[in-house]
Structure formats: C-alpha cells, structure tokens
Length: 324
Image 1 (cartoon, rainbow, N blue to C red):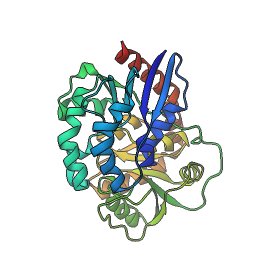
Image 2: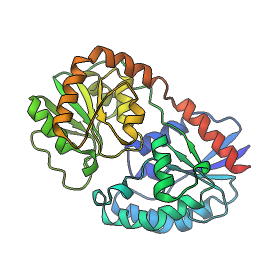
Image 3: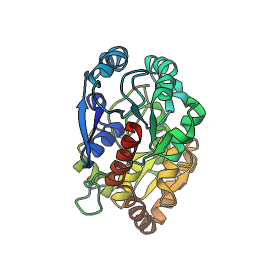
C-alpha cells in the first residue's frame, strides 16, 4: 500500500478549474493507494500569503512526514522536504502574461515555482502544450513530465434541461487573460446576448452590456451550456480549458482560440479562431451556428475520450513511479 498525501488547500481558494481537477481525482478509486488529504488556509489574499509563506515551505513538509509521496495539485509545492513530490502544472500563464496577475503572484511564481518544479520527483502536465511550456519556461527535463489530461463531470451531458433564450455563453473567472472585452465586442456586432458565468476576479475587466451571472452550481451551468448558441472561449492562454470539454460533453458547439491548450483539448471538434481579433471571434460564432449539428456530434465524440477514471489511473501510475 502506497500512502499519498494530497494537498487540498486549493479547494479553500477557488472553485474553478483546479478545484474540479482535485475533486475529480479524489472521487476515483486508486487500488493499493491510500490518499491522505492535507489542507490549510482560507480564501482571499491573506489566505494566499499564509499558504505561500507558511504552508508550502514549512508546514506541509512536516505534515507529509511518514508518507510515501506528496501530491501537490498545483505548482505551489515545497522546494525541499522528506517526501518525494508529484506536482501538477495546469498552466504557466503567469510567466507568459505576468501583467495579467497580481503583484504577489508574479513575484512568487518567478522566484519559487521554478525551484519547486525542479525539486519535484515527477511533474504532471494537463496537456502536451503545458508539458512543452514547462520544459521551455521552467527548464524541466521532458522525461520527468507525465501528461495527464483532465476529465469531465457526469453532470455535463446532452440530456437534461436547457436554459431559455438566444445567447452566447462564456465561462471563467473575470480576469484579463480570459479576453472577455474582445468577445463582448464580437457579440455586440452580431447583436447576440453574451452571458458570462464565473466569479469576479481581478484586473478591472470592462464589460458593458453583458449579463454577468457570477458563479453558478454545476447543474445550472450544464443548463446554460445546453441552451447556448455556443460556448465562446477565446482565452489568450490556457493549459487545458475545462469549459471547452464541459460544453462539448453537453453537445454545445465551441468557439475557442487557435493557440495554447484549448486548441489541443478541442481538436477538430470546435471552431478555432484568432483570439486577438474580435472580427475573427464573431465569424467563428457564425460558423459554429452554421455547423451546429456537425459540431454537436464531433464534440460529444471528443469529450467521451476525457474521463476522470483515465486521469486517476495515470495519476496512480505516477504515484507508484515516484514512490519506487
């Protein structure tokens, strides 16, 4: 039996993509592996400082003593300690777009993340794109990185109620790299309502004439996906793009950026556009409308290949390798 400590502290900080990954993996059985949840902290900026200054460098290594492996499901992890670390990297946006992040996150990431990643026994990347970024930006050896794609929750499927109205849906925290002002301009030009589901973030993102729904439960989010003309997700940078997968699983056409991790997740099952051009985004929405039936079939087929069962099996393999 391999005993693995799993850092669940991020669950106290966010309900976005990272939380989905942690919960998705913990819900799956791992034969011959006992997982011990290790958590600390609270939400908000003060909670972030407590995690970065106390939990990861000092308290977490102590809590992990006696375990066989420590899994840190974000790139925040101890740079040294008594237990082999498996680190998950979702994206490295802070290195590509530092001005889109708060000052503390920029400083912490630049000084600490490369050391922690190099100290990890193994690194799990959520996509081939993120693996390449980790090699280039963090100086990691590719042979220490295992690609473990995310899964999708069973809540997100084609059967079920659909929200009413004629609208384009965007999903994600309101922050600069989500590229929502360009999307809003695209939908304005088309005369289509834009609904945005996601928590308020940072960066003073200007969004006039947009319906802001805030965070919504998964059941309501699935209804919004099913009722939408399409999901528009022209983010400037993503390591994976979980909303792309969720929308496809619901049978909803997807329009997303033609670069970074979302293009890899979508494959040939979505309309790919230049995220820097609002006219290209608008044209993509129109194309998704014309190809709705085709994209529904392609998206459902594509989403079926991403499961938490597979992600858990690959993660368990990494635990065994790190413990050996």
